Every structure is written in structure tokens, then in C-alpha cells.
Amino acid sequence: MSHLILARSRNDMRQHLKIWRDQGKKIALVPTMGALHNGHIALIELGKQYADHVVTSIFVNPTQFGPNEDLARYPRQEDEDRAKLCTIGCDLLYAPNLEELYPQGFQTRIELGAITQRLEGVFRPHFFSGVATVVAKLLLQVTPDLAIFGEKDWQQVQVVSTMVKDLDLDVTILTAPTVRDPDGLALSSRNAYLNAEERRLAPKLKSALDKIAHQLKTNPAGLDFIVGQAKQDLLAAGFREIDYLEVCHSLTLEPWQLGDPARILVAAWLGQTRLIDNIGTS
Ligand code: PAF
Image (cartoon, rainbow, N blue to C red; front, side, top):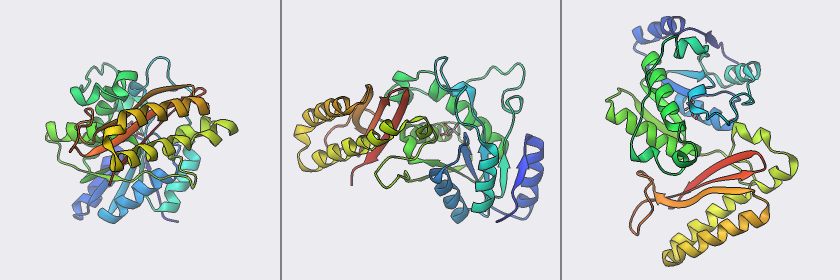
């Protein structure tokens, strides 16, 4: 178990980072909203491979939640998170309060174009602007050499990468594969909302993605039919609603065309819980 520095203010955090920077050390940032699980731990492990020091931020960012979303009930468990960060050997936890990121009078938003207007952007129109704004702030406050994001939020990774490129931010974005439970369910802090029956059904999301990936490999001409059938199967199994289940160009997220690199993405509701997942095709 290593020593974890806790910084609540940007100044405090930067004082610690200055010592490492003066020693020529490389710093990785893993931005999170807490309720840490093994998916986050994999991001921190990756950070440890590529940098000398890993900073994890925990901030439940209000600007990425819509008015009827789960901001109030989003799991907050800082004590458990701190224990996990100590065990994994994270060097510094940056856990700012609201004022540190959105001080009185804050009025700037970062808006991206087409890439934010599909998939998640259709169903959560506020989401990517909130993510881009807070990630930009965290990158500017921490100024890490690397920042690490999970492929579970595939569209988020593409949005952040586009923003970093468009704004010439001096940071390398690394990604880590989705971590799954043995039955295929992608780890997510929101899985805690699922009741026992919903948890039993949840891995069907990954099975639907696998079926479509197989079709794409063997007979792409029959893709529309298989996607339609996969949606019907999910609804018949007990999913309440499917926001989207689509094959897309893996980087632009535009609808997939023959020859494009493909990513299959889904968002669906089990009761009151919205789950997202995605896979690539190789
Ligand atoms: O993926 C998340 O947990 C959040 O969207 C992020 C990147 C920490 C921004 O609040």
C-alpha cells in the first residue's frame, strides 16, 4: 500500500506536481467521477506503465447531467475510492469541490460539432459539452503529459481526442479496453443501480453486440436485418427501451459503410437504469 496525497484545491495539487515536474517526472491523469471499479483501476495501471506519477481526479461533474438524470443519486463513496487508490499505488487524488472547477461567474462551455450530435448526443444533448468543458478544465489545471480514458465510453474518447487536437492541447490521450464481468457485462459505476433480475439480463447487451460483429464479418449485406432482430430480442428479453444500437465509423461515429473501420455501439434501458456498451470488430 502506497501513500496517497489528497488535494482538494488546484493550488495544493499543483504544488505537489511541481516537485515531480522539477525532477523531470512524467505525469498521467485519470479523470473519473468516482465510485471506482476495476475499469478505473485498469486506467490507473496503464498510467503507471507510461508515466512516473499517476493523478486520479474524482469530480461528479454537474454540467454533464441533464435535468432529469441521476446527478443526485450518482454513487459517491470517497472513503472506499481512497482505499482503492492507495492499494493500486495512485500517487495523488485530486478531489476538487464545485467552486474549484466552476467558480462564481463561470460562463464558458466547450461545444464540438458533428461528432457530438449522434448517438449519446441525440439522447443526452447537454452531455458532451459538459464532458468537454470539465475535461478541458482538468487538463489545463493538471497539465499532465498523458490522460487516460476507458473505451467503455467510446464516443467520449473520440470527442475528447477531437477537442485535444482542435485546441492544440499538449497532452497525449491513451485508452484502455473495457473491463467486463465474467458474464460479459461492462463494468460501470451505474451497474450498482441494477436489481438482481436486471443484473441477470444486463449481459445480453454484450451478446447483441457480439452477434452483430459476427454478422459484419461473415455477411455485411445482412447487417440491417440482424441489427433489427437484435433490438427485438433485447426488448423481448426485458429491456425497456433501446436508445440506439448502431454500427458506426469507429472514429467519426457516422453510420458505417463498407470499408470503414467499424464500432458497434448500444445504449438501452433496464428499468430506470441506462446502460451503454460498444465493441470493435477485428
Ligand atoms: O467518464 C467519466 O467518468 C466522465 O465523463 C469524465 C471523463 C470523468 C468527465 O467528467
